[in-house]
Structure formats: structure tokens, C-alpha cells
Length: 425
Image 1 (spheres, one colour):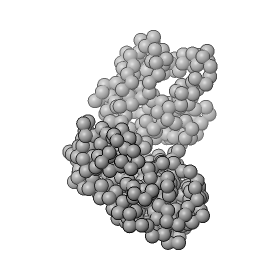
Image 2 (cartoon, rainbow, N blue to C red; image 1 turned 180 degrees about the vertical axis):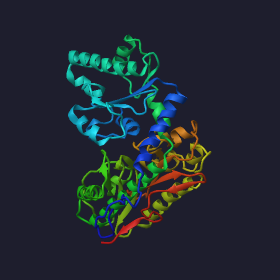
Image 3 (cartoon, rainbow, N blue to C red; image 1 turned 180 degrees about the horizontal axis):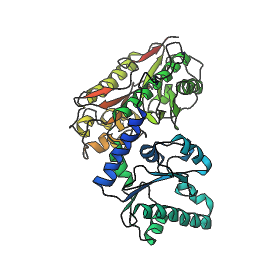
Image 4 (cartoon, helix red, strand yellow; image 1 turned 90 degrees about the vertical axis):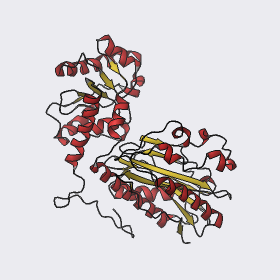
């Protein structure tokens, strides 16, 4: 991690400091998914083209460009097997096999390039041939495990692949994705520790912002320093992170324009999709270049109150409706930006489950939770965020990452939040 002066030091992981017990992480995820897939749902096998589901059940990983459902790599988990078979892209399997001693011998094979979305790039006849080879490959494993007559769950939907399996007498189900969301919604202690580490990396990125943001500096320069802080401390970014300032802070553009910072600007950054060991964060903080106006401070207080009033009710057994009810109706407070229906407020006052992916159960939002509530359960982890405009053309945005405990919540994000962070100029 980094100290206040930007000096780097690593997350502790040594023979005398346990850190994250990776063995418990791997086997705990496997055992949880195994119970959902083969006991609760009685599938015969799961075929996964989703990178994050494959990582969850196999603890293997290859570059980001394989995500989320390119089909360049995939996995098959047959009932009765202790671990899935990983079908790796190209010659990367050479490394996967040597890096993953927990996988049984022979459980790393080569993938048939052309599954998932990349298949359409091959041309019609090549795609048809690839599908045939792919189905042949999977059938060998289904027969080996004796589950070819049972339901093959998939975490993707492709009518051509479905038809090809059914032509071979294999009944398929697209419920594999929902089953994996069920398995992943409650986090193991080791997963929570990964999320703590990711939030700490987020803190180093906010620290980089405070050292960089000054009048005349561009949003791009701030992002460059934030990315450097992330990678210097063992993190990585999965198509995420933005910095927004001044007039683009209200309503929230959720993007970076590259404008140069001026005195009096509101600046906020979301370090979303920053990861440590694959576990993502989504974490906002708001800053002011010099002392903010009274209107901006008042807006910040309203956003803070909305956030913490909703956090105060969170515990196992309540519903997402109980959380969303703590937030005002969007049309009542955001008429200045043309909001007349909750359909315009998606992503504003909002909460979403977080883990290996940015969106996992639960989702909290007045647009769905008031009429379709979900139960909050111990072990859920999610990001919860609020925003507000100051009436002077700028806005604020704050967010916490929380872990639902037996009695309430643990807040994993640690950057000061009670007041807007002022950057002296």
C-alpha cells in the first residue's frame, strides 16, 4: 500500500502473516458453488463461458480481454468431479496447468476458439465447424462423468450452441448464471478480506488525487496518478475509474472529459472496477479545490444523511425496500435536472452487490426495490451510494462499501466521509 507520502509497501502476505488464506478462498468458493449447482439445483454439469464464474469455481485467470463471455476460455464442471475442467485459450494453458496445482491432472485442456461473442468474427462456415468441435469436446467430458443424460446448465445464452447440444440429446438450461449469482451473493471471510484490500488500494488512489488536483491540472493527469497508485500497490483496473469536475459533476456524467481543474471546483472520483485478487470496489469520494460554498456543503450534508440513514437500518432480515425507503423520491429532489420518473434515477441513490464483479445481488433502488424487495442476508457485500446537486451547477457524490454482519454492517471503505475533503490551494 502507500503511506501519506506515496511510498509503496506491500499488502502483508508472508509465512508468518496469514493475510488471505488462498487455499480456504479456493475451496470455500468451490464448495459453495458445488452445493448450489449439484445439490440445490441438481444440475448434471455447469458449462461456463463467463470469466468471473470460471474464476470463482476454478481459481484460474487469464488476461482481461477474455472477459466476460468471449468464449476464448471456458470451464465445465461435471457432478462428481472435485474440480472443473478448464479449457484455456491458445497456449496459455501451458501456464495455467503449472500455476494451478489444485486442479487434478488432465483438467487443463485447450479451448475451441470461436465460442461466445468472438464466434461471429470467424465467418458462418468457420463458426459452424467451431460449434461442432466445441460440442464434441464437451460431450467427451459429460460421458466420462456419466452425466450426458442430465441437465447441462450454462451461464450464457446462445441459441446455436443450445440447439447443437439438444441435437446430441443433451437437455440444457440457461439458469446457470442465476445459480452462480446465488452461490456468490454471500461472501466467505477470505472474500471480505480481499475486498478490504481493494478498498485500501482505493484509498491510495484518492490520496493520489489530493496530491495532484490543483488549478490547471487536467482530469486525465489525475487519473494517470490514480492508476499509478493502483498498480504500484498490487491492484488492477477492469475498464473502470473516472474523475469528474465542475459543471460535469451535476448531473453525474459518470465519465471523464479531460477538462482542466479550476479553483472552486467540485471534483469527485469513482474507483469502480479497481480490483485486488479479482475482487472489485466501487467507491466514490468528493473533493473541493479550495473551500466549497455553503450550498455545496449543504448538498454534501444531504447526500451524507441519505447515505448513513440508509446504512443505519441494514442488518440481516430487512429488505431492500427498507433501505430504499430512506431515500427521497427522485422527482421530488432532482427536478432541476429534469427528473420526472424513477426510471431517470438508475445509478443515483443506489446500492449493488459487489465481489468478483461490479454487480451481484442485491440491488437497491427505488425504481425496483419498493415493489420488488429482496431480503438482506448476512455475508452480503455491497456498495451503497448517494448524490445531490448544490443548486449552483455542481454536485457531490459519496459511496461506501459494506459487509453485512450478524448484527449490522462493517464499513470496508475508510477514506474520511463525514465532510467534503478540501484540497488547499
